[in-house]
Image 1 (cartoon, rainbow, N blue to C red):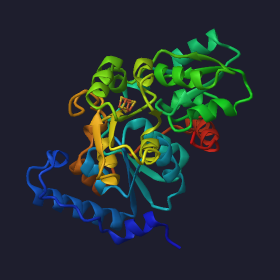
Image 2 (tube, rainbow, N blue to C red):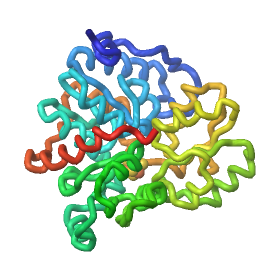
Image 3 (tube, protein in one colour):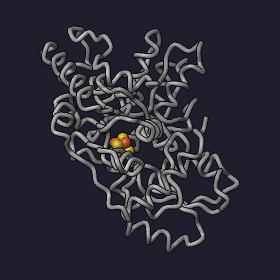
Length: 343
Ligand code: SF4
């Protein structure tokens, strides 16, 4: 029996999209007929090559549309683990494709643009983690999935923003070293006061740039708005949020406020595309006070439709992880996958 996603791959079709509609989401493709042609080619190539296209919620909207599945890091890791497709085309950043490869060593995993890195993942190295482990020798190491395979291999368990609190709670140790995101780590520490949490000094520049005063301005303009923030935001931003959750968690958070018409969203702007699609009758405001240009991840926008097409056609750029590193990283990732989402 085929899953919905397998059925999507073998159909080679795609949902109805109005390529002609004037939309800021389509701005990279001035010629709508060209974008539509690319779309058809990509889905047909995916069918022929039995390729599963996964896209993170921060990808360009048209890349989200061409994907068979869109989600947060946790949901994408779970999809990569259960797919029967021959190849996984990962539209996200390098550490995500690497995690998919670690969980599926026998499968071909490709990243359409090798330059799609992550500043947060780069803020920790195996050497700097070893140094922090020497400082906190009794602490269990919890590492955010936004990290390299080498760093994961040196960790006891991984987490994503969707299950970080549950992961920390699930550990028998009282002392935790949380790496690399200091904002997420600080937020987790506040949720689990029964644990002693030391936090590494890394940050995601896309989220860390947002300040509480900017969110305050938004709230004064839209006093009835519900504020939803990603835990990679600073504490002064999180202090004003009604809901703090991962990107997929934000979709569920909107459902918890059926009476609210307006939402202020403190995360990377492309997530608003998914929100608008799912809740066309609600208004979503980017928390940076403009159209989201400050909450913009340049790495996530390095993949466009042409890159996806080339990636499937030429089966590039294949991700390889040495088995000795993959073994340790897989242990940390599989422990994480056994822990449920925070809610
Ligand atoms: S949004 Fe931040 S954490 Fe996510 S990929 Fe971009 S730089 Fe990395």
